[in-house]
Image 1 (tube, rainbow, N blue to C red):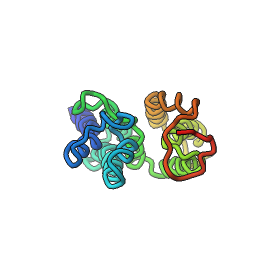
Image 2 (image 1 turned 60 degrees about the horizontal axis):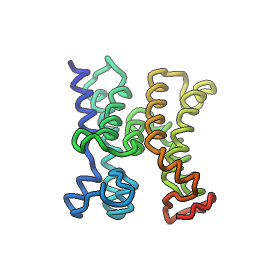
Image 3 (image 1 turned 45 degrees about the vertical axis):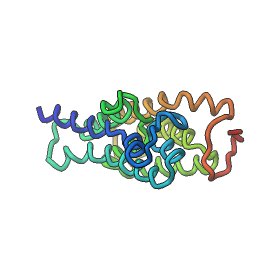
Image 4 (image 1 turned 90 degrees about the vertical axis):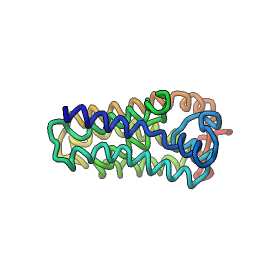
Amino acid sequence: MTTLILIIIAYLLGSIPTGLWIGQKFYHLNLREHGSGNTGTTNTFRILGVKAGILTLVIDILKGTLAVLIPILIGYSTISPIAIGFFAILGHTFPVFAKFKGGKAVATSAGVLLGFSPLFLFYLLVIFLVTLFLFSMISLSSITVAILGIVGVLFFPLFHFIFIGYDWLFTFIVCLMASIILIRHKDNIKRIKKRRENLVPWGLNLSRQRK
């Protein structure tokens, strides 16, 4: 019963459509009708501005972190906290409060890793920022992090880098997280191939996207 309650809490936390609610409450805008139509951090930054974007990013990260920390704080050890945290990612991607149409899972996945494996998150953050500087695309940075996240959990334990050994449940969950991120970015991948992807006003844009 405790497991089910924690799963429900994690899912409901993840289901909070932060950008959508901020847009409706404070800006009288529906993010679904502007920009990419996505309710996540990137579209919030693009449509509502820096303040709304930062607030959305922080809350979306905290959703994942809280989902992991709650079972730790109550001393629940029947199931790994990373498994509970995964349901926050599902909630963010398929939110019950927003007709099951959510974000791309990047920020909430980062929050889950922040609560469970902050050092691994730091490694991914460095990759994200380097990729963003080189190519000026949030989407490509997210895709790169997802791919290298899978590589990391599969091979780092072999060399005792970041991980001292394999945690196969953690490995499986990270692979699931990364797969969701990649699937949710399928339209971005198409635009990147056509050199039509949205850019941020920072970095080198080495791939010469035209939009």
